[in-house]
Length: 237
Image (cartoon, rainbow, N blue to C red; front, top):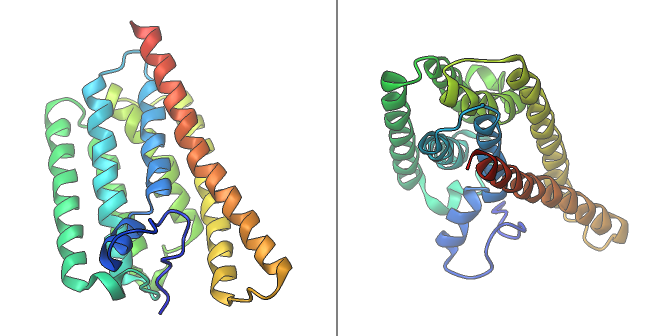
């Protein structure tokens, strides 16, 4: 069974379902996406910290939990779905997405109506990418880089300003490129691991190299974002 339980971000302790649940969340990559929302937020001149927290929670729920649960249901390979089961995945997806949109709608109606455009776009990618609608037309690296890279940063900026700027758009192209790099490397990495040619030293070294790059991209992005966030917070004190 293609469980991916040997991934570097999956805990080595706990029950099988617990490990699969944590693995399904892809925490380092979810952390990247949430980091992009924070970067977008702190690009604003004035920062509302409750909105930074809100947009982080929205993306953690909708993409970190909801999108991954849907992916486990709708993808051709179901490494987590075989363990967690359809019912649990549906509950996780519906609950997390509903909560995310409830928070988003509150801020849209109260402060940032422009966020509604991002909510619609992300909702489309959430379903079309992860459930592979339209014969998988949108299940590709470009869609991923837009929905997990560019839009989160723009969402963070819009959440603060109810506006868009050239700086935010330029920054979103950078985060889109980071997301594109991550998904391309991740797909190659997964294919290498599935080949199971572990008696070949070169093959093992190549897997380790790709894994190191993925760690650097995800964890490096999170750490860099925390540093930028701290600097912005101190600047505004």
